[in-house]
Length: 289
Image 1 (cartoon, rainbow, N blue to C red):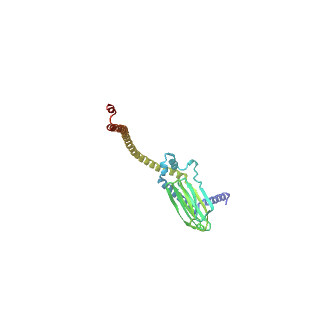
Image 2: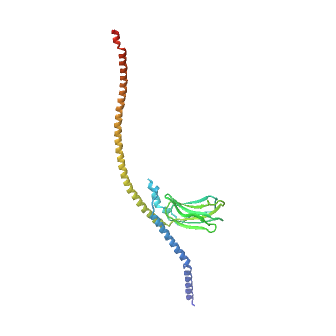
Image 3: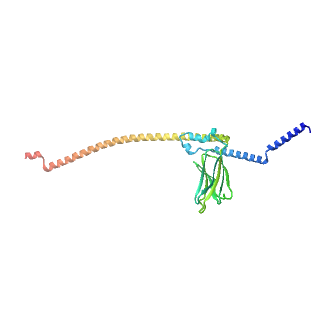
């Protein structure tokens, strides 16, 4: 074999080796496919949640326009870290007998993915997850006894409507004799920026529909309120007129009352003087006699 043929063979061998090194395995392809499907499912779930967005009653009742816009806008993109998950964890947390231990986590970014893993030492415990919002409480995972001392309990879910408080509850109220020790890891992964951008547009569209609908209802209600206001003002004016007339009449009656009181006294005096004259006679008649 010539030198050139040997170099060509070595080059072909190296090239084949490099290709083999970078050829994705079946497991890698399956993992990538699963990740793509999960990302698609998350995007669809976010779209569904944002498409049904309704501003909370407190936002609609507020005279300040900014809180609604803050909720619609979501996180500020200039400071947003989509790839940085928040991890909450603790080990061997004691839960006394006949008691309960809650882990509240506040979620502000719609489309966040929440994963959890819990386990206990030696004994089981009741475990559940709820999402608390201004509109009410949603049960994410029904509270039930789990054999977390035998195998870790895991779960994963998407948070749609925000803001909300997720409450991970460890309930040992059923136990009369044993304290339990709980370990947990809760990971909150915020949504990708493209999902945040799509979400804020969907929320803005739904909020705009609600706000415009409110304006139409308010204009109709305002017209009815103005009619009632005018009617009441007219009634008050009539009442004020009637009141003034009654005041004048009352003044006349008061004056007549005072006059009659004085005249009654005068008449009583006259009666007394006349009766006295008739009984005793007149003074000037006595002198003539």
